[in-house]
Length: 343
Image 1 (cartoon, rainbow, N blue to C red):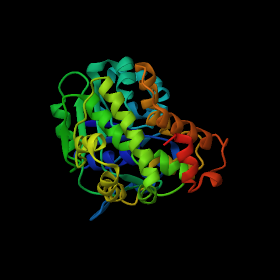
Image 2 (image 1 turned 45 degrees about the horizontal axis):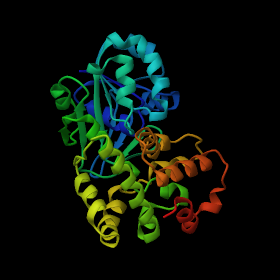
Image 3 (image 1 turned 120 degrees about the horizontal axis):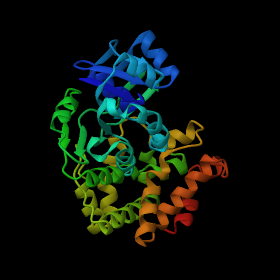
Image 4 (image 1 turned 30 degrees about the vertical axis):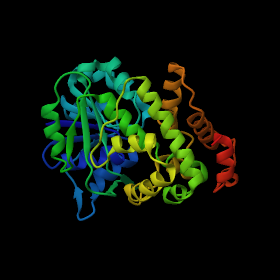
């Protein structure tokens, strides 16, 4: 199968590199990554193996990519969610030369954006549960094995594409309801993300503090309330019992829930810090906060539900990204975060 990877970062790079063992894979990305792949191949580091993939085509323009391969049976749309609209525009010129588009992106709105641009029957919803990092350009590292990939049709059948993804050697599970799958992944993406970014601390430290855990629990309860109001249920994702988490947040006492979750959260990411913390530490002015906690705030507003904790977290991360707040004043300042979130 001819496969196009749009955005060959952590997810796109790893999946593209693994698929290249059995398929014709083309990467579309910026010049530094393309130059590295052309010069040295793409290096994949896994817990027990390390390989260099040298049979990848790589281009900095879609025109070059489609000149090299006139038609793709599958395109993986792997850009950051805040870049989705910008990436859709040039791809529309080649819409009739792509059979299906898979979005394994974070957030819960990319399927709708892609469906509007290319037609809902063309879109496949996906999620990757494994933590994957990019230690340097041209190198992708799988931080933790197991877990796997979730897939769901927006409309139509995806059976043949599920088989293609299984060639990555990651477990693949197919879901009937893409919204339940993506909102359940959103719940996981929220955990230990914004609080760690604001406090500039690793998740294992923030989750060890009962005050931060109380903020986390309140944040997640707001998210679950928004899901219930939309009649969206939780589903267990590969290696991640989201339904049990939702049940615990509803019925378990906080001290017990913290004791259960702390080791799982600390170990679940491997050595990879949460994405929002990575963005702040690297000096970025954009992050996926609007696609994570911001999605809860927007949906809550549309439903008439209050989401004060998520709202406070979104505003705080934006202030840090935009330089309105000094990161040093926030570092480890749990009392300030408690006051801000009202918990």
